[in-house]
Length: 108
Image (cartoon, rainbow, N blue to C red; front, side, top):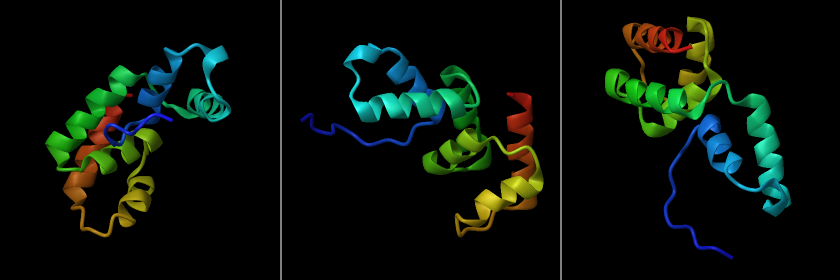
C-alpha cells in the first residue's frame, strides 16, 4: 500500500485529468468508479478549473476547499451560490458573492 505524501483538495476536473493518464486496465475498482463519476460530473477541463480556483482564492478570499467546492458545483445564480456558502459558517458579503458569480460566468 502506498503512503500518502500530501493531502490537497482538488476539483473533479483535476481528478479526471489525473486518472485519465492511467491505464484503465491497471486501475483498481475504486479508481474505475471514481473515474466514471468524474467523467460524468466534471463541469470543465482541469486547466479551466485550476484557473477559476486561483481567481476565486485571489479575488474573493476563498480557501482552497471553498474554491474547489464552487468549481465542482458551478452555481449559476445567487440563490444557488448562497446555498453552498451558507454551510461554510462564515459571512460572505453580497458583493463577494456577485464577484464569484462573475468569475464563474466569465470562465464558463
